[in-house]
Image 1: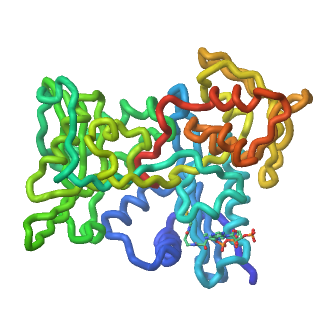
Image 2: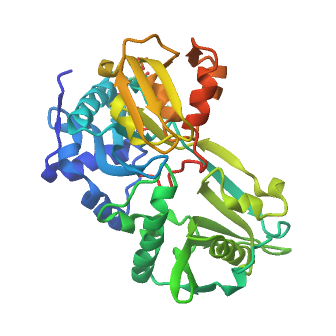
Image 3: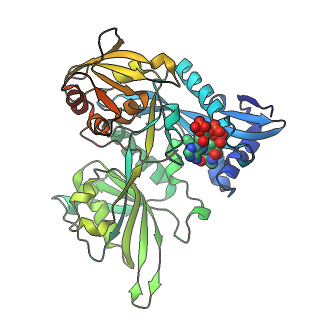
Length: 410
Ligand SMILES: CC(=O)SCCNC(=O)CCNC(=O)[C@H](O)C(C)(C)COP(=O)(O)OP(=O)(O)OC[C@H]1O[C@@H](n2cnc3c(N)ncnc32)[C@H](O)[C@@H]1OP(=O)(O)O
């Protein structure tokens, strides 16, 4: 098989995107979604593999700035649109695209690459580690009650139409980004993504509805959701599928959940992607009736170990030498000394000193955003300790007070 891997030309986008759609089952996106995907595609960062005139593989990257512990926004390649045609699978095409892409990311100087995996078993071999989790909830609102904080009654709620909602939600989102590791700042066009609402993906539900929370005329929160009406002999059993909910303070936050709990003719509020430390868990009367489930979400790859570890801050002083294994990006392999003070300054440089810990770049990726504990990875045998106490020191320094979270897939 002779194939050619090269950068996508803008005129080839349709056939390139069709290869991707086919690999995901062949159900076409709506014209509205397609138009947005095309507008967001960074052609110079997108590659394809051609077999003769046929596109048989795709891969792309977005130029993100991702929040990390401490609040800095770090340049990150948002790896996306990865596919290999079923006719060409398991011949190394994905590996050749990952090789090209990580070399390109390095040349661009982005310290990290991130992705969400269709299946979590795929990307570890390329050095990605699962770094954030997402929680899904299905809350029985006939049985579960909310206890809301003082000030909740002062929040005014109102419906917003799409154009107003885009700007209002974006204003809240932008203010929340630095405080939640794992959240990408929105570049131009991204504010539209969460409010794109093709009829084909509603699965019997309503159009997307948006409710804003206001205090003294200022927008301090929002929620977007679909309603799926349902009727049984015993009465209404509608479900609310929450797409997004965010607020700048506890009262606005509680007011939005209370609103969702109270919508007539519904008895379940479902949310598929919430942070694992979502405050709603502390508002509900009965967490067992919330059907909490957790899965992996954002996977992180340190492309430049030194620059990446210097770009975030640490919760406690640390001085440790890592022996890093990295077979796919060997420029990272070897010993690194990370020193950080609790005020945020960090340095990560090459060293010949003896290692305190050994781990692969994958474990560093998992721990990078402060959600996965290096201590837990050590208990799994994935971090080895050569100096007593080194795991405990580094594990607590890496952790984040706020669980890292990716609010929206890409
Ligand atoms: C960031 C994103 O966009 S995630 C979306 C990924 N895309 C999809 O899931 C769409 C459907 N699937 C596909 O398009 C393809 O099967 C892909 C992209 C997952 C894999 O492409 P391929 O060209 O077959 O992978 P390739 O041949 O390079 O495989 C490399 C290695 O990964 C392994 N691998 C590939 N796919 C999977 C998988 N789904 N689960 C576990 N291992 C896998 C292969 O077995 C191989 O292992 P080895 O190195 O030990 O031999």
